[in-house]
Amino acid sequence: MKAPIGWWWPLLAGVALLVTFAAGDQYSIAVPAATVAVVAAALSFVEPLLQRRTDRARRAFAPPVHLGSVREAFTGGEPGREDIVLTVDLLERRIVRPDLPARTGPEIAALVTLPPEEFRRYLAGRLDDLEGRS
Image 1: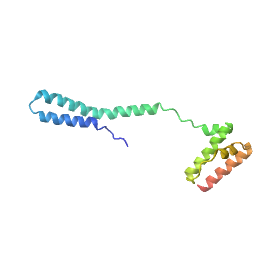
Image 2: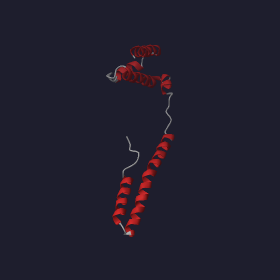
Image 3: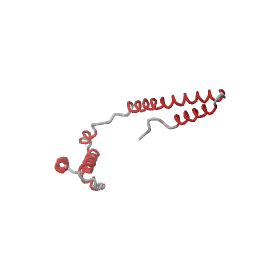
Image 4: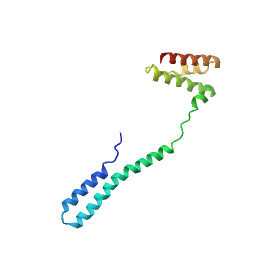
């Protein structure tokens, strides 16, 4: 968790305030120290406001999330099928089997090269199984 303000500016303001009080009647030291204390205290309030503005700007210019990737995977041939198999594995890990081992390359290759009808049956079976166990 990030602190709402940094520690540098309030610390500087406190030290400058102590110097101001310690200077007493020596105005050549007290006035600049008081000025530093006021400026540092103001900056301790301004810094979080500037930080929030840059955070909002960063979020505003973040690249949009592409939601059609799963839909495109169905028409993407073998690379798309690989994405589908890995996505279903991820769903299974998150929903019912966190200990599901990663598929090996030959396992993925065997699934990806299935005929379209057989791949659809495999996928429907996996999804039905996930739905039944969740």
